Length: 220
Image (tube, rainbow, N blue to C red; front, side, top):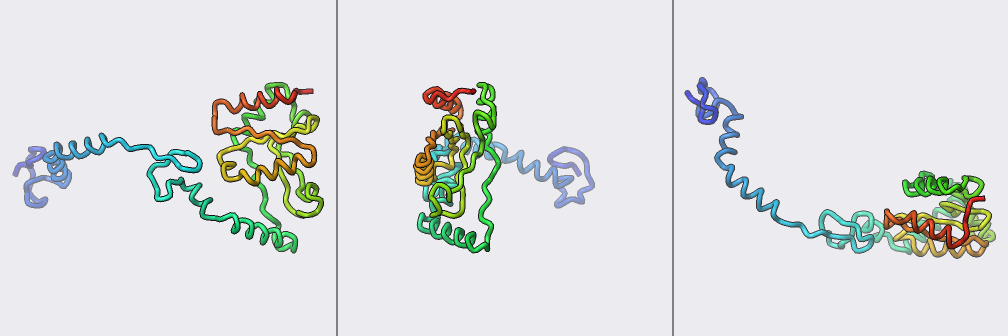
């Protein structure tokens, strides 16, 4: 018997005997319908998908959801402000009772903070002399005992000028209220806060240079 696909002689034991193996049978089916398959694939490739963007962070998403939000934004929106305050108060109460140690801050610096640090050193600034990275100030000190736990962390603090520079990533889109409160509390103890957004990844170092220049921040 001769295989209809590879045209080789075989013993006819496979299937009805038209093909020598399952490989040739599948290949024959694909070869026969190649034109139809190619047309279907071509139509799918020609369909231009309209880009979808998140309504909150404006990040491109792979497909449009019911809320038109990306996964990160939708999870944050689901938790209301009242729920956040309630959870925060419960945690503070547990810390005061000594039941919980409290949430530990994420001490990992972002890649933007690493680049800012390298940029400052290139400009002649010296760490722990001209600036302090991840400078921490107790909330108890700022509020005079009203908040006995927690602390504010400043990305880059310049002690001689009493100026702090915060490098704001995309997560700060949802932190506007808490960021404003932080800035006001820092100002109440004489520290002025400037924020450098990294939404424009190519020009945030220029924004940093403008902050340094406008406030006469220079290495000692």
